[in-house]
Image 1 (tube, rainbow, N blue to C red):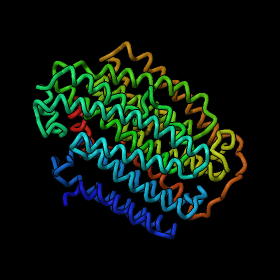
Image 2 (cartoon, helix red, strand yellow):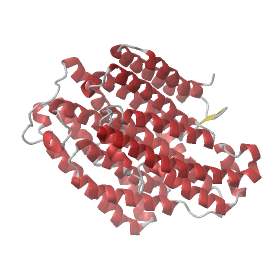
Image 3 (cartoon, rainbow, N blue to C red):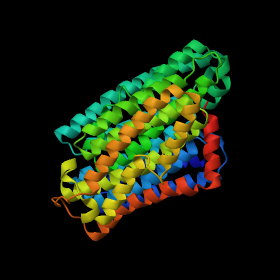
Image 4 (cartoon, one colour):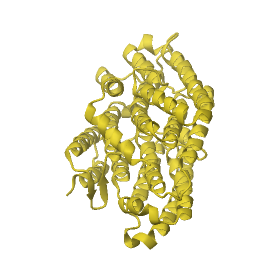
Amino acid sequence: MPLPWIIVFLPWAGAILLALLPRARLAALVNIGIASVSLLLALALLFDDFGPSGWTHLDPLNLPLLLVGAFVGLTTAIYSAATLEAEALDALGQRAYHAAFQGFMGAQALALLADNLGVMWVAIEIATVATVLMVAIHRTPAAIEAAWKFFVLCGVGIALALLGTILLYLAAQPVLGEEGLSWRALLGAAGRMDANLLNLAFVFLLVGYGTKAGLVPLHSWLPDAHAEGPTAISAVLSGLLLNAALHAVLRTKSIIGANPDTLPTGPFLMALGLASLLLAALALWRRADARRLFAWSSIEHMGLAAFAFGVGGAATLAGLLHMIGHSLIKSAIFFGIGQAAALKGSQKMRAIGGLAASHPWLGWGLALAIAGIGGLPPFLLFASEFQMVAETIGAHPWAVLPLGLGIVTAAAALIAALQSLCFGAPTPDAGLVPGPAAMVAGIAPLWLHLAVAAWLALAMPGAIATLLRDAAGLIR
């Protein structure tokens, strides 16, 4: 069996096993074991050949996202084992959580690896359903409402993406026949397809998958989903699902860009990206809930990445760096916020304060992560935003002002949140105080993510840099 197939089917087999395990502690350990093997298999892809393997395809664009996804999956599994007790789930709820987690991991891997447009659509829908189940797992009225909102809005998005997929197939069928849903075949034959159908397909696919990526106008599911599900779900939502959806947009963009008669796709991505950035930058100032605050930050950063891909040129590489940096740092933030909320008994901003004084390892780690997500050095988002702005100055000078205003406004809001959460007078611990081992297991993923994000920004290995440049070259 080809290695990419194993990476997809292993988590799904693990999901079935986890649904049957009666003991919560054993299920948590098995979940970590499956995630560990998945990461090792993803690393083995570095030594595999690029190209098709049946219904999957490995190339420089999906490989970095697979590696980041497997890494975040492992750290989230470790974090879950340390903190799931604080979520107050019953035995059935914990089994359902672990099974849905691995179901999601397999689906997002398939969404990245699929060489078939229809298979990718199905994979993203499976990932969505698994995430909806995890968001609703507390079964409170607020959690059920958030899950339904997530399901309905993303259902609209996935329906639009399906319509775009059908239109793309109709454009390809006269040229490709039965091969009309293969990414590789579509890319090779795009120049002979009907340009008007391709333009229409791109609009539906951009809005449809853009909904899953957290782009306006169908973005409002994201804050609710982050706020109501288990904290660990926020890490994989921001770190993995959004990337898988934006990756689908990039694949589509490359196909449309291969036809010289189609409309330029860049302005569409720039418009949605700027709108998402500016809306989120303002919304960040009015959040009373910590997890909702950083959910809006995810909308901001997906907007920045989409804008970079719209600008093109060297900004395409900046967009890829931004996706990777956001996955690493945002999931680190949710690890920290989850620990803080468990200690304080609330995820409200007013309940969390002075963490650097009362819980130094947690407080300083969270402070560094918030600084990193705000675009400050020495983390990866500083490098990506700097390159993004520099390329915009040369290619689209008119966009520098709204781009700069959005970045600065959002960064200022995040720095204000940093001061509120991490410094000042400590608030009392009113929640469940974890034991030393659980505390370490909950905080270690936060610091590990920060270390990797700083390492990639300051001393990225040449092989990874080359891989990312090759990936940028695939995006037209």
